[in-house]
Amino acid sequence: MSPQTQKSSLNKAQQKYLDQMSSPLTFWFGMLSKLPTAIFWRLRIKSLSLEKCQVTIPYFWRSQNPFKSIYFAAMAGAAELSTGALCQLAMAGKGKFSMLVVDFRAQYSKKANQKITFTCDQGLELNEIIDSLKPNETNQLTMVSVGINEDGDEVARFFVTWSFKRKS
Picture 1: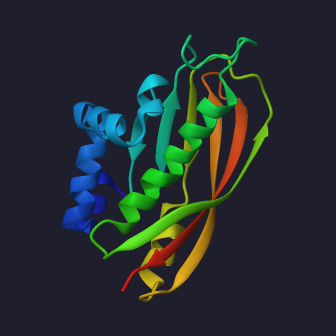
Picture 2 (picture 1 turned 90 degrees about the horizontal axis):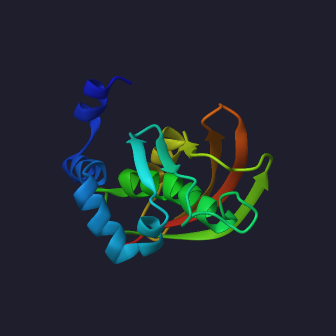
Picture 3 (picture 1 turned 135 degrees about the vertical axis):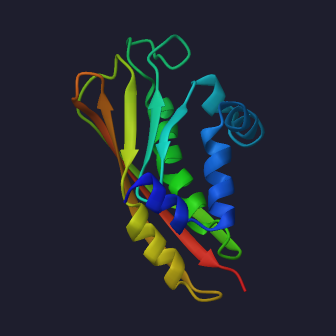
């Protein structure tokens, strides 16, 4: 889907959310109030669309562990943000929902000692689930966020299971 086609398929609330998450200052204040560790670790939303979300985390002293790699919790935060931002975008303007992480797993495959980009590309699948929920109905989706370093190597893979309930 082209950026122009996507813009026309977004509802007003989704466009507002996308604009807020794309604005560095608005993102910073939003994270300060809701997820301050995202600021501490310098998480950034590289891209966000109905299809996918990419979040970066730099390798520097605040995200580093004693073994000279990115702390596992910092990577988990970046991975969760890449899935959670997609969830928020999918639900925007479609009524009231509750959402909760009900399972979380990780696989690490390489030392994370450079900037990592976490990508979740399940936005279309997620939108189908959100759109199909009726009032008081729940559903779950396990979303996969893959972390790739600057050399193009996979560093980690996170499995975040979100539970959604449409409120009446």
